[in-house]
Image (cartoon, rainbow, N blue to C red; front, side, top):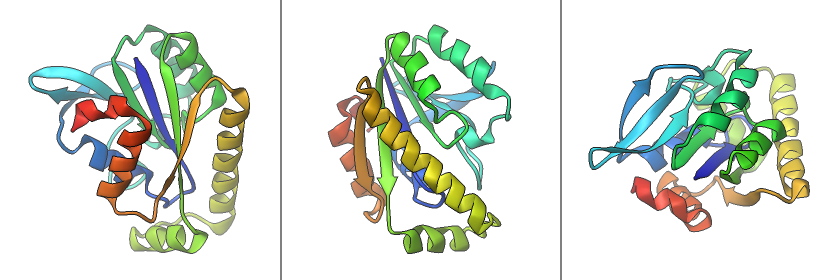
Length: 183
């Protein structure tokens, strides 16, 4: 079982990469909490994506603010071969540790880009996030990356988000071969 969690600054391309990774999968909204979509290939479930797809603030950021305790319990009982997630809501060392304790191979993929590239992407999508919020979220993502590295129990990688979505997905599949099932 593998958990792949995408982290990075707002506007870096986490949702874009997730769409690219899962574009060849059918999906349906599974019942229960936390909300997730089952990912389908060849008539079977190959994995799940936590959260909901939306135009803005997709992934785990579409989940309720109080989801963390429910998600910690869910991951302990979720025997899916592949769990994908992105966004801040569940991007915590506690969630990663709970997944590791439940038997998942935890892969934390940090997307990076120059701040001006992320700012341009946020502007293109009409983001109303304040600069102070963006700065805090960017710092939080950097601390999460450092914490995941320091924990020594997770597979941590970096992807250059200035690449095209297809090249980013290829890079993610190189770092985490379990993602090949989504192709």
